[in-house]
Image (cartoon, rainbow, N blue to C red):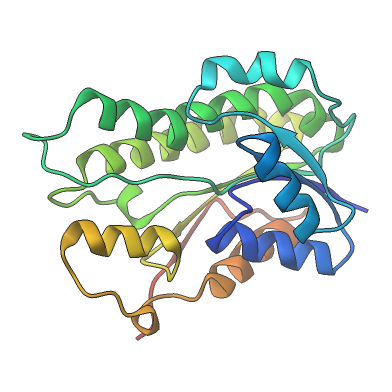
Amino acid sequence: MATHLITGAGSGIGAAVARRLHERGDDLLLFARDAGRGKELAAAHPGAGVLVGDLTNPERLSWALSHQTLPDRLDSLLHIAGIVDLGPVGELTPKAWTSQLNVNLVAPAELTRLFLPQLRASQGQVIFVNSGAGLTAHAGWAAYGASKHGLKALADALRQEERPNGVRVASVYPGRTATPMQVKVHGQEGKEYDASRWIDPESVATTILTALDLPRDAEINDLTVRPGR
């Protein structure tokens, strides 16, 4: 039975992935920002384990995890958590830049570093849920796009470094998806939100599980998903 560590399991794409893996009987470790959120996630996925750490403060993740029981083996690390804060470069503050870089890039890098021994032991996988903005950044998306472009660089370098250890690395680039984050984006853009126009989180979850379940004679490096409407 496989063991998966998932960030962002509380809503949107992460919730869909966690539910699908839980339903098929895999073991889950769900990453929560605090103990209260951890209890909510555990209640939603009976039998799942919880790890607590603040992705907005990557420098404290090692300390936080040192006080918790970690698995000896990990089959996959799924980086799905993310935040967005739009704005033109002329108006973005250092806080807006730093918060997005921390959650979207530095925290995934640090969690990957901390769990590489377990992933190497299982010849497991790391999957980064990136964004279309990680391939092309448009006006107003500089900070978020920079964090996601950086995430692509992280994945590409990690893939080359860990291939000799048998660790697979994939990046998934969803287009606009009907999640709470998309509601926030529409609010910042001043646009009306219509969930029916965008990708269902379940469809993105299907692509993630496709990469996860691919037989070991192949690997998916980059997978782009776009709205079909």
